[in-house]
Amino acid sequence: MKLKVVVIILVLFGFYGVALGCSAFTIKGRTDVFMYKSYDWHFGNGVLMYNPKAVAKISFPAPGAYQKLRWRSKYASLTFNQYGQSLPNGGMNEAGLAIEILWLNCSVYPKLKGQKALIELQWIQYGLDNFKSVDELIQQTSNIVIAPLYAKVHYFITDRMGNSAVVEYIDGKRIVHRGKGLPYAAITNSTYGYSKRGFETDAAGCGRFNSICKSLNVFSRVDKSQTLMSGFNVLDKVKTRGTKWQIGYDLGRREVCFRTCESMEVKKIRMSDFDCENKVACYIELNTSADLHVSDFKKVSVGTNDRLLKEAFKQLRLPVPFFVRWLFAYYLTNEKDGVTLKWVMRFWGIFK
Image (cartoon, rainbow, N blue to C red; front, side, top):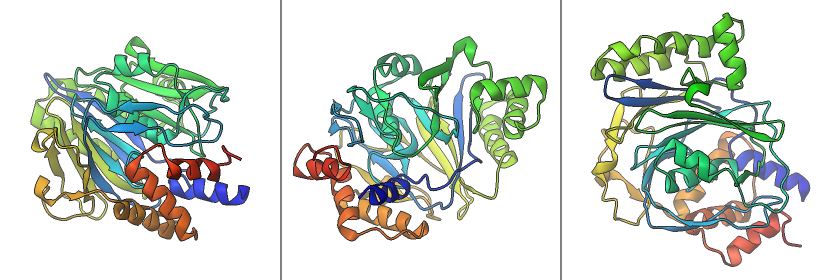
């Protein structure tokens, strides 16, 4: 049983091995704020998902997390998902807050002692559901512990006012870099402190971070159209063989733009294109060659989440029983505190 749990953890949340090519940064032009992300991983299958507001949610079960965290989403969001609903790799909400996740191999998380906790990916959705600014998110998540299943990560966050933050877990403590503590609005796959020292001393081993920071020094002097294109040019400079997605967020206009390794044309869509009062989650494939239109988005179902999980299992070449896959797909789709949730918790060994 323990071996099975480890296998599911590795597969379900996509951290099978270490992705050491991700980069994220923020560009502030004269009047605009843009955040960018290079997603580097073993495979690029995934969807762009619209997550409605005013939806009741409950935290995903995690080992050692005995308290459930409940909330109702305040803001709608657009997220990039590979492993099902409410477990995004990153995204932006209707308030202009964007959150991205990157691998950080030296992360050490605090031990759970009965606190409320969120798993690594659902922390992103929780932030997008509930907060409109970096300050609000940092202040109101200080008592929520990350309960890692397998991933060692840190987070990069930016809001529409141009405030950015890096959240890391070092030696069991949450470390937040923001304001004067974040002179360079960028992050790769080393701690922010190490990267900052490396750039200031021109140290080896910080190549992508150094390249991004050098580019950021000139962006405040260019106009909006140049800034948008320059951001993708910077993404190309730090591109690796594992780069699957290149993402840009126009936080002022609440616009998401992206391209994939299979479709290099930049595609765009705005939050305002959606009816934010609509409580139906919907999605579109990332590797589409067509322009994005809300009418092409499909309703998220158990089958949607099951298909995403099935594709992840296939890409990682790990066999997982159908009933286990369906169990997680059903829970991710409904997020209800019922029999299915209890079975998920029993699977993790939380209930005996």
